[in-house]
Length: 391
Ligand SMILES: [Zn+2]
Image 1 (spheres, rainbow, N blue to C red):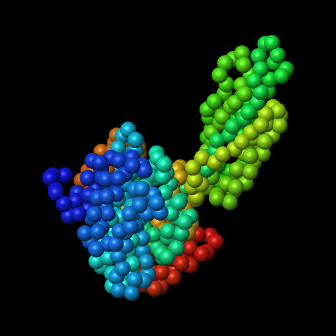
Image 2 (tube, helix red, strand yellow):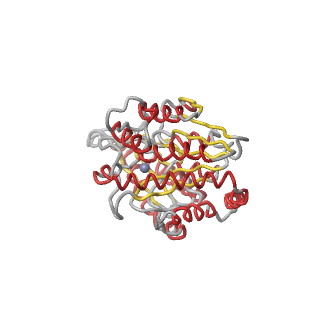
Image 3 (cartoon, rainbow, N blue to C red):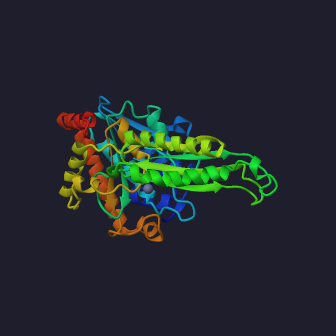
């Protein structure tokens, strides 16, 4: 970007490039969030800074006519530590801000909002800020939430995995391992038993539930001639079935308890971070957005195709989709197979191709918001899918 003095005059591409240059990591996106707020303010949005007491979060809102129905766009603007905007969140930021501005210009009645949601990548204190917002009722007055995410393909819906991280601490009894081993109780033994028992559990889980469990032994003693009195493990438990997640956590807890009994140690289990939910798919919303994309010449695969793929990751957008009809549309900025969080995706997030895809995304999201405010039948279909069990 060349010397632009007034940030609030930025267009969608200048904004995307500016956020890319700033490269602020999660929970520290102070300047990035400030610029987004300035741009929205200059287009008549009312700003709430430090939304929900999260330092780099915000809410921007514009009421048009009757103020109903309401549509919110979610902005992300955190970069990855050490590399920069290799997840393309600079484009998500611009997409949300300019889709909202454009929507507010095009509708006759409705409320259009942008939520600034920090730290999607989980590098700081406010990791998974959308979960905090969803849990605390940020979206309860909203009828629809829209977002977007750049990638190596277009898509109108993906499954994601629920995930919760845990830290397990075992405490035993220190003793001289040669002089009086009989009085020692090894916390490391409890940790190793747990690690092995978890591996045995893998065979006895529902195959279609996409169970993934990753763990390490973080601490396992200090000297080989001292019985380890403290051992620490960390685990992440993931599955594509949120109900099943509870059962898996239960079984994990039993394993830990059993291993502590077997080794005569004590244990504590602590949750680390927040519970990321699974994504609730809304076919009426996804299929309609796909039609808007096709109408603009984008070849986007059908929903059935992308949601049947193996879910790979977890996102805090999923928690939003559980409380309000929501979709994060995937837009293509690099050729298929390009690795993400890489040097290639870092470059891709500022190319001419990204610019074109972002422009399309803004058009399509504002088309959708406009249609949503005008078409009662469309709104009802989305509501029906939201409350139907299969969705
Ligand atoms: Zn991302």
